[in-house]
Image 1 (tube, rainbow, N blue to C red):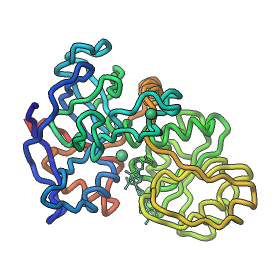
Image 2 (image 1 turned 180 degrees about the horizontal axis):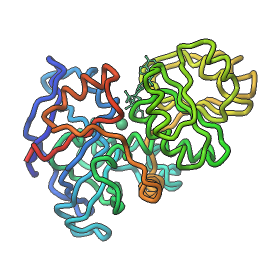
Image 3 (image 1 turned 90 degrees about the vertical axis):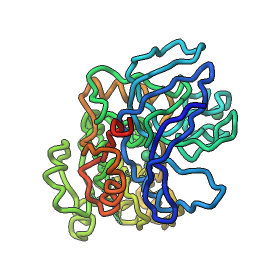
Image 4 (image 1 turned 180 degrees about the vertical axis):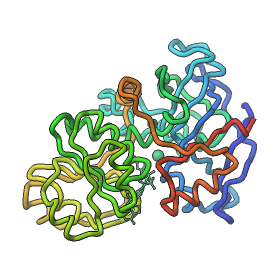
Length: 348
Ligand SMILES: NC(=O)c1ccc[n+]([C@@H]2O[C@H](COP(=O)([O-])OP(=O)(O)OC[C@H]3O[C@@H](n4cnc5c(N)ncnc54)[C@H](OP(=O)(O)O)[C@@H]3O)[C@@H](O)[C@H]2O)c1
Ligand SMILES: [Zn+2]
Ligand SMILES: [Zn+2]
C-alpha cells in the first residue's frame, strides 16, 4: 500500500476533512497519478450531503474529473510513461468482456463500471476513493493522455461534465443546422453550450437566471430562454431538435418537452432520480425522452482531441483544495461561473 492525503467527508458536519489515505500498490497495468487539478461536480455535492457515515462505513472521498502527471507505471503499462500529462474521469474500470464494453461503452458495462469514488474495486472489493486527493492509482486503460494545448486545470471538468454531455450530442447527431437548447447553465450546461457551438449547432440556453444572458452569448449561444417566463416558453414552443437538460434538481419536464420540435429529443442528464411524464407530452409531436451518463473510453479520448482542436475547456474558478467546503457551499447556492477546480498542490 502507499499513503497519500486527501479530503474525506465527515458525516456529522457534512464538511470535508484532510486525512491520510491508502492507495493500492501498483498492479501490473496500473499507473500512479499525481493529482494536480480536480473539478467539483454537483454529484460530489449530492454525495457529501447524502453521506451517512457509520462506524464501519467506508470513507467518502469525492472527485471524479482530474488531471495530473504520471509518477510511476506498472510493468505491463505500454502506452504511458512517468512524466506524461494525463486525465481521469468518473469510471476507472469495467468488465471488458460484455457487449457494452466490447462496443466501447464501458460506461454502460453490464456488470456496472467501477466508479472513481464510491465504487467497488473489481479485484479486492475495496471502496474506491476519489480525486480530492494528491495521488490516485488507476488502470492504464482508464487513464487518458491529456492533449498538448489543453490547460490542465480548465481541462479537468471535461472528464465528467464534458463527456456526459458529449456522448448524447454525438449520439443525437448534433451538427450544423441542429437546433439545440441547453437547460441549466452550470458545469455540465456551459460545456454543453461550448461543445454544441463547436459542432456547428444553432445553440440556445434555457435558464432561470436572467443575469446569465451575457455569459450565454459569450459562450456562443444565440439566445437565452427564461424558464420561469411563460410567455417566453410559449414563444419558443417546438423550436428545438435537441434539448439537453442538465438541471440538478427534480423538476417538471412538461415545460421543457413543449420546447422540443416534432421527432426531437429531450435528453435528461442532470437529475437522475425518478421522474413522471405525461405520455401526451411525448405523443404530440412523436417526441423522445432519453438519458446518458459518463462516457466510453473511445469517446472520452475523442472528446479530448476535439477540445484540443476547437480550443474548448471549462470556465473555471481555481481554488486551493483547502477551500473545498467553500466551493461546495457556493455550488449549492448556484454561485459558480461555471466550475470550481481544486488545486491539489496544497496537499504536498
Ligand atoms: N448523467 C451523468 O452521468 C452526470 C454526470 C455529472 C453530473 N450529473 C448531474 O448533473 C447535474 C448538474 O451537475 P452540474 O455539476 O452541472 O451542476 P451545477 O453546476 O450546479 O449546474 C446545475 C444548473 O441547474 C440549474 N438549476 C439548479 N437548480 C435548479 C432548479 N431547482 N430548477 C431549475 N434549474 C435549476 C442551474 O442553472 P440556471 O441558473 O441556468 O437555471 C444550475 O446552474 C447534477 O444533478 C449532477 O449530479 C450527472
Ligand atoms: Zn461528475
Ligand atoms: Zn462490461
